[in-house]
Image (cartoon, rainbow, N blue to C red; front, side, top):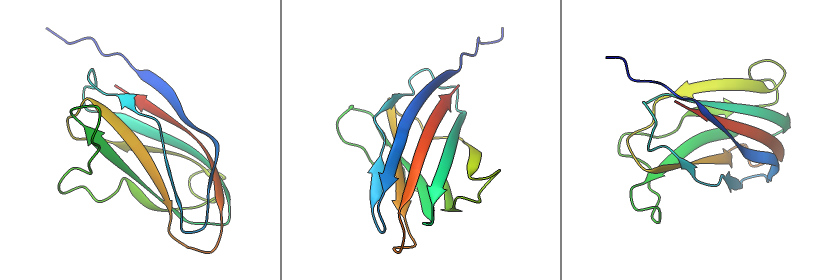
Length: 120
């Protein structure tokens, strides 16, 4: 029997500034019903370069980067995807909640990001 699949979409960043050399971390997203598929959608402005990564928790308190996972995607800029709008599919490790972290790696310029996470 096929398992029903539901998709949940949550806005995780709203015009979030990511300072040069800085980070921004989203609020937690429930992934307990996640069948293993996520899509991170980002709208990026500014002249910095970002790396997107994630951390998970089992106890809804301590968030860790799963072993063997370094990042979702690096080198993200205002020209990534279509005019700075990019959708990145990834399959997170099992956990109860997930947080997305954006790190400005160019250490020279600031970015502003609006982002959504789709979980299925």
